[in-house]
Length: 187
Image 1: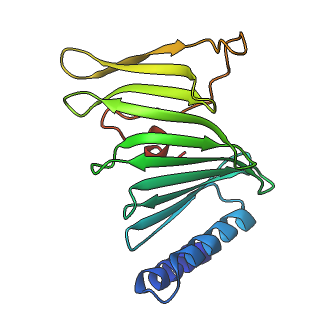
Image 2: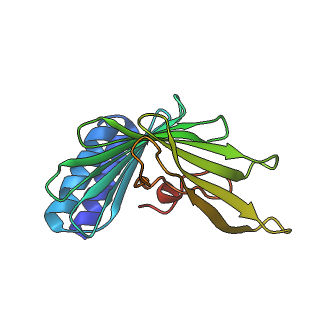
């Protein structure tokens, strides 16, 4: 009861502009961590949406959707608060993912993923390249005659420089309309 009341007050303060959305999300996150509540906090301000998702392992994912710059950024932290990875998505005018850059905990680029769409605006292809620009993974999205999504075809390439099949970093899947699946599902 007290938590719900506190959340309502923080939300009202954030929406009134008396407290910045970053402070509201930080306070809500702190409350959830202290009380060990697995849930999500979200705040919207001037075209920017901040969202924090707590995970069962004690870690968290922070999402920042910046509609002004057509970007979405996610940061994944472990249970000790250490950054594990960061993803920056560039979006088109319709809010669909066009590219994603994946960074490791040291902020070095690990991979780049590019997304393509068919004539109906549905996700059609996802290509992931390693930091040297070598194609290492490809997903081809398919649809049945009625336009329903089918399981994507997956292809893993060989990195000929290293003479081995590289471990492709997990690139987020897309919903048929080009939205980031993990973002839509609150992961």
